[in-house]
Image (tube, rainbow, N blue to C red; front, side):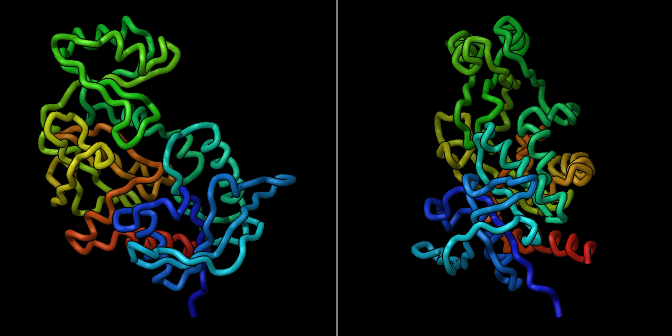
Length: 321
């Protein structure tokens, strides 16, 4: 008889999610379908006392229902994180000191044998924009800098450039500066806070008209379908949060080539659930904090991405038992 597992989920407030499209809910549904118990936490519920990690957690049950997608099972209580079998870290950015502190707490739980997805150290090490520098041969011309002259020179070289913050999500703070250089100075000043913050400059890729593809990786292997997020008219951002429309589709040869190149490094770093962003034939971001789009792909192709991630987690349990 298999052991009943207890899975902690660190996430944004569950009452504020959009259940029909929320990937974290899909993961929780998949875990519950295995008979595993779910313990809900927010970042503010994590603490360390005398070197031991604890969490103020509350048992929750979930359902695939747009009006009533969760129900509490009992009162909240503070318990050792070491009593959990696994923790899914699903807190959305911003990636700030609060987030970093959470990874320290989860790293203490990991030291006690708790499976933490994704690995806390790798969440700190792998900035979702800058991590592409480890795979520069797969990425478009890209610059990470905060010096205005350097950022301007990149535009002079490439003529049509996307500028974006290092810590943004959902398409926030993304600007395109065309060949005329209109507003280049203002964009650099605003994003870099007058040279105080490093930002990203990336050559504009015309293939964005066909979508910014989200390729989901589980244990270093790609889900065979992706979601192309196509910009609305007059936009350069395909993000669904920025008004883009989702177009599920099979992976292309380029998508598979990129996934095959990145996968081994993801496995080595304990990055079990990751979203690669691909425009045309280029890797543009590697999302490690809380990748999304599982619900849209599942709805189109019946892929059960949450179930595949739970399979990966079950394999880790088997290796411990």
